[in-house]
Image 1 (tube, rainbow, N blue to C red):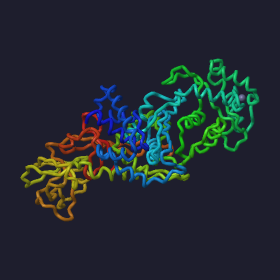
Image 2 (spheres, protein in one colour):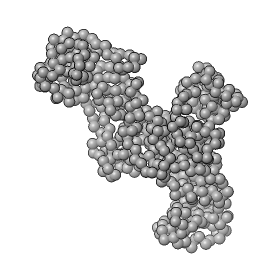
Image 3 (cartoon, rainbow, N blue to C red):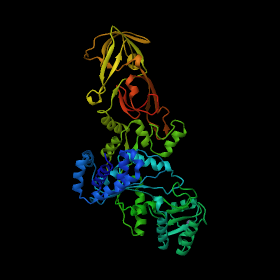
Length: 572
Ligand SMILES: [Zn+2]
């Protein structure tokens, strides 16, 4: 596709999804996403995107839809309608006016909880033809790391989430300082040099410290001292004049700024006074024009504080929409718990297939569409705590994989079977019982086969067994090798059907089978990863890295990176 046409297509798509107005940023990203070779021609790509955006934005929405339908009908998906039917309406939402945000803290890898809440924010922005921000909440220099920013961008893209604007809270430090000074000037913030322990105690018992009574001039002078380095880390904080007896303890004169003597991955050592979460979020939600904050219940107590900060500064408050937290049975999303697993040596990396990180789920063979569908169908706006069961996500994944995954033979814990009286030759077996598009393979067959250990152990002399697609055999004796004789090729009724692998062309296969990481709250499951060894048919060697196949009577498995045929079992 020509550059101009490519730019036009994505500009149309972007516009149609956002009430008729496209932005160059997402268009450029999409163009490069479709053709990575364009990275080399980024200058031309940008120009083409700008021209296309200008042209598209001068059209009406209907015209945009029509043109997109001609140019790339597949992008005017019905999926959108299907998805939106399932989502409850957003309270107080108006078409074209909704602004939501993805607010990740880049202090760890993206996990399934981020994915689900990100999807909700994205789907609602799109449903109301609004806008979506990606905003990194990165004002804790000790916690944030460069690689985490990219982990989120990559994860959101993988899920099909497109955002319209991107920024970091750390971009706005000067602005945060201005607002802080305004609060000090209003007598609504003061510099406190009490120890952490003293502040904690006073907040607990609801008493004020002596610094609260300082006049504005003193506070401005001390604030200047914080900024200029007269105080060291831990020696002073800027606190809000709240209410030390408030029943919501977050309102008891919380710290708004503190000193952190640690370089920030993006701003280095330029700033040493950093806003705390609630202050940064209050200001940023205002700056981004966020209309709806979709959040989980554990943040509920903070709404009051954030609303109060904004009300002091004359800013409008968003509508809060609460949904239950995304907790999964047996697999904590908590960084602390996952780190404990890595430190115990049980897992080596954050993309371990037992982990609920996006990279872990991807490696396990969970499709982004499955996470999308799961989020849409399972999320209700509710205060109720609920624990999700992984089996529900697996069921959705299985439903999506079932019609398109190739079926292959893999024999775990293999045992040899010798068939007498069979002439051998070749057999053609389809890769899928219904989906003919997946084609078939020819398997060379002879006298010796591997069959699954559990099946072999259950065999008794006289049993009739069918080797799928191939023949029926009668078991003669069971030993180290199962001896059997040929009983015809036509399928028989009520005969157990098993998979098999010709010994001559067998490929060594290893399947990692992930299980739950934790047995209960704090007890690590020592057997959370099993390794199943066996043989696969020769076609297994042709499975590409990342391809997900179904090993018959075993489960859906994704081919992992590396030269050896190593697979990871997603689920049955
Ligand atoms: Zn104090």
